[in-house]
Image (cartoon, rainbow, N blue to C red; front, side, top):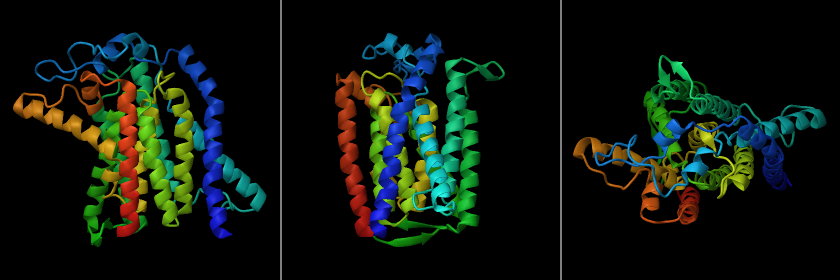
Length: 362
């Protein structure tokens, strides 16, 4: 009976989150189109370019494989759907559990100090940073001197500061100082746990380079968070599992309108909120060293961009026609639907492999 109740605790919020997302999306779409929440032409030209002969990623000709007019006039910030779906569902089940069962840790409430408070905080902070980034970008604002947009240096500083705080919380308050090495056991890091945590957090944030094609980032994130949900359920972290599936519900409702042709794009508000949560769940479930397998296509996208940049800087030559890798495939003649579906397929295979390794090695 307890096992059945835990399944309900996970699946019901997941369904509610999905329905919330479908319900609020028309309102979000209306707002985004009304206020033209897309970058101006100058910005979009900087983003939709391929390297010139020197490998410069911020200049060159507009990619012929991208429908420029459609891209320019499709709003960003669609991740608002994900954020509000998660927040509304979390608040609803906390309120219902409090009112019906008489205590804030009621039978269906998945918000707990020991498991999900820090996850929710990270989700909110990521959403706020992403929201500011999207607003500054779409409105072409200046927040530091004459610099247009949200400087990447400032974003890295903010993310680093927050990740340091969370790392300190894990180390000092929750007692984390070890990592699980599959087929080996726990390895003590001591105070080095903090910089290691920060490095993983920044790497997760940097995987936003995967967000470039209709349905690509959303589909991969559905697979990754579904896997993390199953892993946390397997480890009896039922509140963490419920939160993972609430996120999945929100992403699925977003994907309903994001698959080709996309009505909106996720934007930084969506991706940052997800990227802030993923490493925290990985540390909680002792799967941080398996995360490169579970989130394999995120790693591939990030690695391709870093490799391209280093190759250009050091050897003055490009490895790929364009980076990240999905744009390379576009220039090879693959259609967007081929790329997206193949990325999804590989993600599913690697996620299953990652889950299997959790079961046999941890």
